[in-house]
Image (cartoon, rainbow, N blue to C red):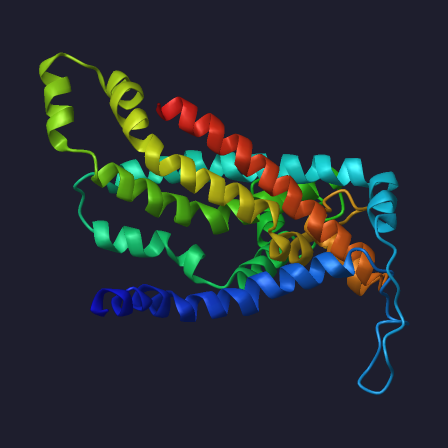
Length: 296
């Protein structure tokens, strides 16, 4: 009898987390999926005094989304945005982690300073970079003019606008990847490197044959998280470029937002939300399979 009672405790321990997850994740997910099969908009969504009058349309929104001529281009922009940001997150994060893993003076100060971009709220950083990319008064163009270069139309030229957004997100995301990589580097036993030195292994060989293979179990989940976060990074795109010019920096999550709060088509916006979730789920499934195959 005592044994049966004790089996309740694990469920009691996870109950608060389950309730929070239900309120913040599961319930909105179900509601969003339901809205995606309705024709909900600002006119039929209802108010505290008027009953909602939207109707089920089932797959109509999904068909409309697939037929949207801008969807393929925006999806391609989202992929370019995600791959560019995550690539530099990993490269710069690993470089900084390797520098901080050495015994240098002021190591704690450097670590603290490099964490500042991650500690500052993302919307504040996005506003700051938006100002620095200003054509007439931005810090970057002013510095370029002082050294004899021509100013760049960062926020009004399609190519430069995407570059500006990527630079901003690199600033925000590198500290997270740096911390993860630094933790992975510190978990590698020094004996492995000492044995490699005895065998006459060069620095480059140690990096490719010891550091990278032993970092994989930590780096692969971090990259997966980075892809998911960057794919859904609303703040940077919306606050730095606004998706412009001419929707050339639009990504799926900002496009869904504009469908909801500019076109007031909540049903279609929810459909794009479901599509984003499905894309990330499919990516995660194949990514995990490839990662598990490499580790085995």
